[in-house]
Image (cartoon, rainbow, N blue to C red; front, side, top):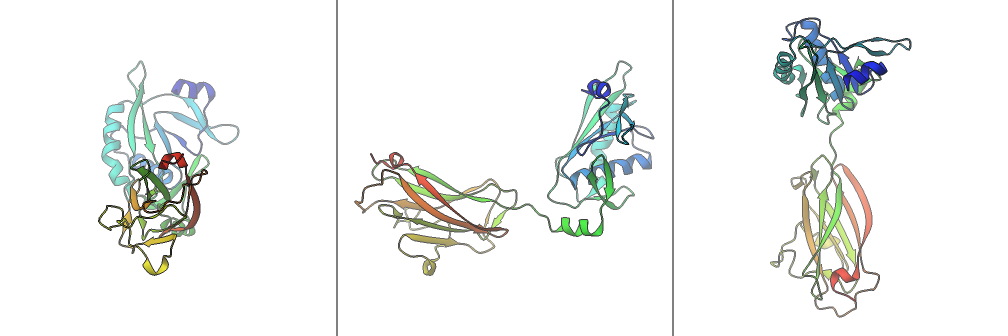
Length: 292
C-alpha cells in the first residue's frame, strides 16, 4: 500500500495524514507530542481518519502535501508502545477506539505505524500535551476550532432512533403480534412513546404482554381508545442503543372477524427525547397469523 502511495504521489486529504518525527520514536520531543495531540483532536472532532507515521509528504504544485519518500522509522515498535501510552493523555476527553498498528518494515529494519482515529460523538476533544486547544480536520490540514465551532459541538450528542419491531407468537388461529421498539441510534432513548392502532380482528391482548396483564411501557389510559393504544414512559425510562424492547401483544382471541386477505395493518406513532414524532404503517401478512 505504501509503495503504491509513493508511485501515485498520494495526496493528504480529509481522512489521511502523513507524519515524520522531529525527535526519536520515544516521543520525547515536545513538537512530536503536540503533533499527536493535534491530529487526534482534529480527526475525532471531524469525521475520523488515518495518520501514517514514517512517510515524508511535501507540498506539490497544487499546494497539497503529497508523498515524496518512504524513510520509515528507526524503531517502529517503540513508537507503537509510546503512542499507546500517550493516547489517553493526548486529548480531553479521551477518544474511544483509537488504534495504533505497525503496517510494514523496510529491508533496513525501519518501519511504519498507522494511527486510526474514529469520528467521535463525545467531543469536542481538546488537544493536550502542552497544546490545550481544540482542532478540526478540514481538507488536508488541521485548524484550530473557532468559538462558534466549539459551542456547536458541545450541543452535538449521539441521538436515539426508535423503530417499530414485531414478531409472531403462537402462529396459527391464536397468533399474537408482539409489537416493540428497537433503538437503532447511538444515543439512549429516554421517555419512549408508542401509539398503536389496528382494526378487527386484532386488538390489545387483555392479558398483557406477559399473560399477567403487564405491558412493556405504561399504558396511557386516558389517551387510549378502542382500536388505539398509547404507551409512554418518563425520562428515567431508557431504551439503550441496540436494544429491542417489546411493548404489547395484539391478538384476535374472542373476535371471529376474518383476517383481511391483504394482511393486518398496524398504524403507529413513535417518539422519545431527541427524536421527533414519526408515523408509519406496518402490514403483517395474513399467512403469518394463520389466515388463508
